[in-house]
Structure formats: C-alpha cells, structure tokens
Length: 143
Image (cartoon, rainbow, N blue to C red; front, side, top):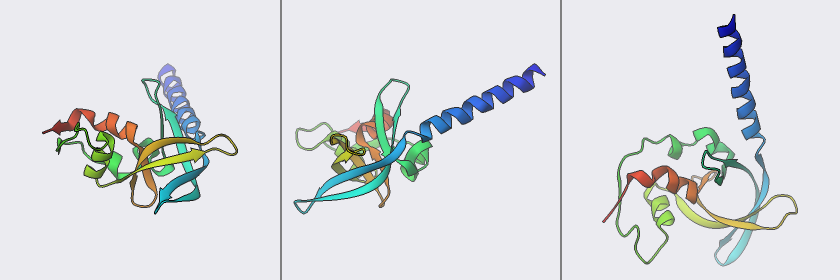
C-alpha cells in the first residue's frame, strides 16, 4: 500500500513539474534583423531555469529535449578557431551543429525588449546559444 501511494505521489509530482514548466511557455514578439531591416513576428517561446539556477529560452518544440538537435547523440566536435579572436564561439558551435545563429530581441506583451542569441534549426526549432554551449561544452575540441 505504501509503495502504491509513493508511486502515485511521484507520478503526481512529475505531472505537476511538467505542467509547471509548460506554463512558462508564452507568446512573445520576436525581432530579428534581416537585410538591414527589422522583422517582427509572434512565436511561442519557453523559459526555464536549470539545476544551476540559470535562465534559458527555447522554442516550445525543443522543450523537454523534443527537437532533433537536443536528441542528437553527443560526440566530439572539432571546431577550428573555436576560441579565436574573430567570431563568437557559440555561433561557431551553432554552425557546426547545422543551425543558423541569430541575435534576436524578444518581448512579452508590452514589457521592455530583451535580447539574446539563439541557434535556429529548420524554421521553428531554436535554442538559446548559452544553453547549447552548456550542453556541448564537454565535447568541443579546439585546434
């Protein structure tokens, strides 16, 4: 009986945790610069805090490791000039993983605009570059 109750409590906690994380997904205004012109769209974006208490952003499709790049088996990556003086290491990692790095701004409702960097995969999956770097840091080899 206690084992069954413990299992039920664990399941309830798990469902609550997932639902709580889901609720951090909201519609944001997203602004990128393309051809020297701002392009503004509305997109679902999720925010979450990891075990180190760091705040990250990603598309709803990537939450809970749902997109392909986060499911990908991590293997050693050799990125020439990763820590070189030219170019962002995070942008180099994004390119190496097949994404398109972008600096973008986002705004929730009528709050102030904020900015960060993201790695865009296909037309809907994106991950904040700082989270991507955290996930892959141990596998990057520089030359």
